[in-house]
Length: 101
Image (cartoon, rainbow, N blue to C red; front, side, top):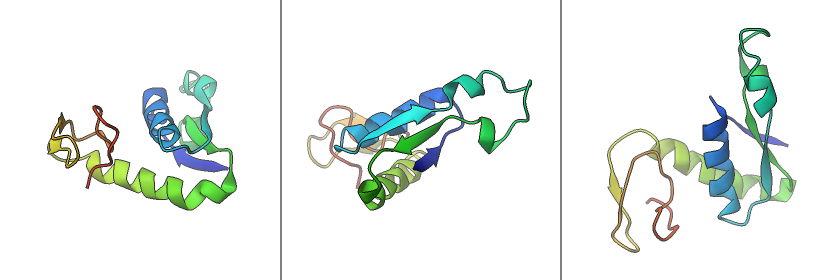
């Protein structure tokens, strides 16, 4: 099931890898269509997206995506687990994988 529409392929891969780091099975789809924007109508149908492979993981995945989106705007944050400084677009610490709080 489609769980997240991204603005571009790198964003889709960031979200997908974030989900995978939490043992959520997913994959990026629609990357090929993204390159055709301008040739086909621009919009949600031409954006890459993250596809959830196991529907029972939906709630956990949506919570992680919400955290990612809320941390994507703002200032750097410090990890409560290891103390590492992280850029605002990261929903999990790049050093230890702990989620932003």
